[in-house]
Length: 363
Ligand code: NAD
Ligand code: DAU
Image 1 (cartoon, rainbow, N blue to C red):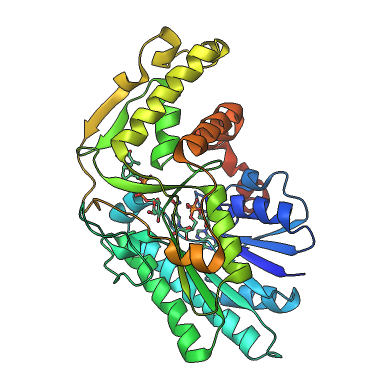
Image 2 (tube, rainbow, N blue to C red):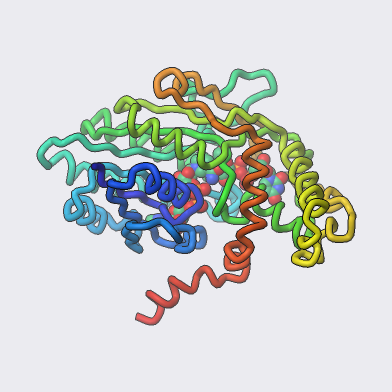
C-alpha cells in the first residue's frame, strides 16, 4: 500500500490523476495538497472517495514536512504549478514563485524527511512539460529525453528550472526522483482558459474563437487519462533518476483542432435538438456553422511553432502508449462538457470559489 501526496490535486490534471489512481489503487492513501488558486477547484474532486484534502501552499516547507512525517507519505506526485503560458507573459513573477521556489520547498521537505529517516524507498515524481525543449522546425525530429533544454516563455523557463532542481536533488542528495515531460493535455475539468475548453464554451455561447496568428502552430494532443496512465507507468516501472517523455501521438496544427471542434459541435446540435434550447446563442442552434465564429487575432509573443514527442523510451521501458486517438478523445471531451454544464457554469460565474470563501475568508 502506497501513501501519496498529490500536489495541485484540485487542478485539471491533478484531479484527473486522483480519480484515476483512486479507481485503480483503492488501498492506497491519497492526500491532496492544493492552494486553490484560480485554477484549483474542489468540485474537480467530487466523487473521489477517501481522499484527504489539505488546503495549503507547497511553499510552506514546514507544512509539507509535517504532512510527510505524520502521514507516512512515501510518494509525492507533483502537479502544483502556474500552468498557463499567456498568464506567464502578463505576470511572470507568480510562475517563478510557485514553479521554482515551490518545487524547491517540496524537495527540501522531502530531503529532510525521507533522507534523514530509515532509508525506506520513496519517490518524488515531478510532472513537467514538453515546452522546456523549445520550438521545433517543420522537419526537426520530435523531442526526446535527450533534447537540449531551450525554454522560450516565462512559463516554460520556470518549469525548466524546476526540472533542473529535481535532477540536482537526485544527483547531489540521492533523492529518488522521476520526471515526465508531456504534451498538451485535454479532457474533463480543464480550466476554460486553455484552447479546447475555451473554444468549446465560446462556441456554445456564440462568442468568437480567437485564433492566434496563422493558426498553423503544431501541438501534440494527449488525453488526460492517457497522461495519467503514463504517470502511473513511471511510478510503477520507471527507473529512479530518469525522465520520460509522454505524448498523445496526435501532432496537429491548431487550425485542424479548431475545425474538428467546430464540426463536432455542429454535428452534436444536428443530432440532439435539445442543445438548441440549452444554448440558443450558438450558431449551430440556428443551423449556422460554428466555424463562422473563427477570428484571427494577434499572435502570442514568442509563440512556439511546433511541439512533438518521441515516446520511444516510455514505450520500450514502461510499455506506455496512448490508448485514444485524438478523434476519440475529443469526442469524449465534447460529451463531458455538454453533460457537465453545471461544472463550467460554476467556473464562469465564479461560484466555484465559494468553498474557499466559506472555509477561509470568514476566519
Ligand atoms: P492547473 O493550472 O489546472 O492546476 C494547477 C493546480 O495547482 C491548481 O489546483 C492550483 O490551485 C494548484 N497550485 C498552484 N499553486 C500552488 C501552490 N503554491 N501550492 C499548492 N497548490 C498550488 O494545471 P494543470 O494543467 O493541471 O497542470 C498540472 C501540471 O502539469 C503542471 O505542473 C503543468 O506544468 C504540467 N503540465 C500541464 C500540461 C497541460 O497541458 N495542462 C502539459 C504538460 C505539463
Ligand atoms: O505543451 C504542454 C503545454 O500545453 C503545458 O505545459 C501548458 O501548461 C499548457 O497550458 C499547454 O500550453 P499551450 O500554450 O500549448 O496551451 P494553450 O491551450 O494555451 O494553447 C494551445 C495552442 O492554441 C497554442 O498554440 C496557442 C493557441 N491558442 C490558445 C488560446 C488560449 C489560440 O490560438 N487561441 C487561444 O485563445
